[in-house]
Length: 156
Image 1 (spheres, rainbow, N blue to C red):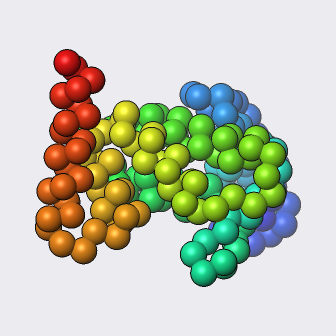
Image 2: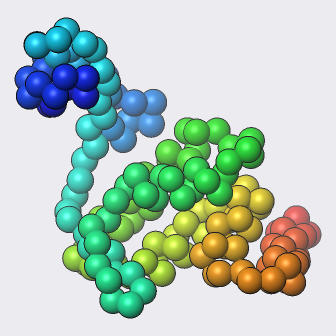
């Protein structure tokens, strides 16, 4: 593993342990050149998946982009990081185990919407505003009212 401080190609693993949700391994490493210590995370990747975006553009599935967009929707909300990590891991698992080499970005967006709906209603609306390209305040009002109606129906 390349050292992030001096770019030397060799480092030694000093400690390994599973993360709290057991979806990855946390490794403490020490550079054999400069002696700096750093942490890496190792995750299982079941298969290479290509995301088909609008305009038929294609790019490799990137877990960090998924994490970033969900974290942005949950920003300043009382959503524990562990729950965000579980949602991201669940979506990644669904994408990788679907058996398809290519997955439309819309399908991933719907998975995120489904996950956020049960996690936090404000994060759900925030994500929907970008995903569904809200252009006016009325778009927010209409979507928020459907979220409120669904929540009332579930309690009901």
